[in-house]
Length: 352
Image (cartoon, rainbow, N blue to C red; front, side, top):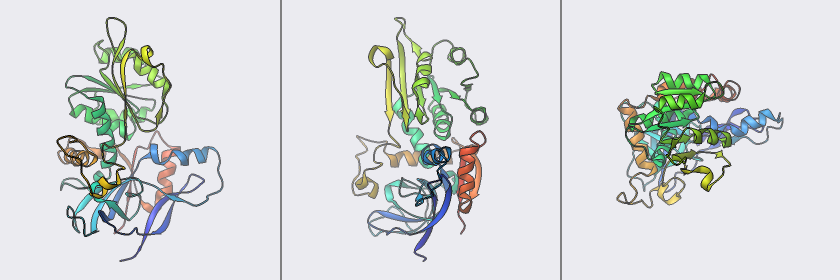
């Protein structure tokens, strides 16, 4: 087998390219996968590239590999791995492991078997799905409650759909009519275009005057203004205090008046995909977390996400706007940066 692999990378000017690297060594707890599809996560992966283009950077420097979610076929496993075997179809995740590459070496607990009804392209959505799942779990939904999702990128879209599966009524907020149109097409209950619609009036109508029980803020950058808007549409108690739970996802930054300034709102941070991720010993399978104390780890979230896909409860195909070969990675990067109102899910495909 060739010891070299092709890897999608970003240079200092904010453009995508393909570089050649040695395939990482197959060490304890690791799985070698031939990738068939990977998914670009624009918010996390391309923020630096967008800044480089905006600032007019001209020095390409040394390109750096990127990506953290893909799906493919197991080629080999380390002797310590018994969960997988060559020929297995798997979804993979993990920064520094599941990159945009034709060959990756991934810790076994960051891999999960693909159900027969789930394609490689669909499996590439597993990481963002479990990120959304963890955010929703932090918001503690209950049947019949009203959920507000702010930011209808990939994480927001998936969180909204998972909220519906959990029995809540979901409204999505975004400034982009394109993203809101996608949300409507795949069945989200209600949408509001921030900057155009009267968000307070629409929230009151949607919740029948009750206000939202919970919110998920699913975007990066400064969220101070958005948090102020969200606060205005949460439940209001008779004594004038706002009530409910707000989960903050990803690279969101915000300033607020803590204490009485937030009333009785609970602000809850959501860290990535659930317990286990970034615990190297857990990722390799050296240790496990007892299910009786911690049922929902990153691994159990992965299994549930793929089960939902197999059962048709999550149709991630509705989120894919672009399918391109790895060699066209700069076209994909450019589309996300320059055409954000026409680009959502970009799947990169790999030749046999």
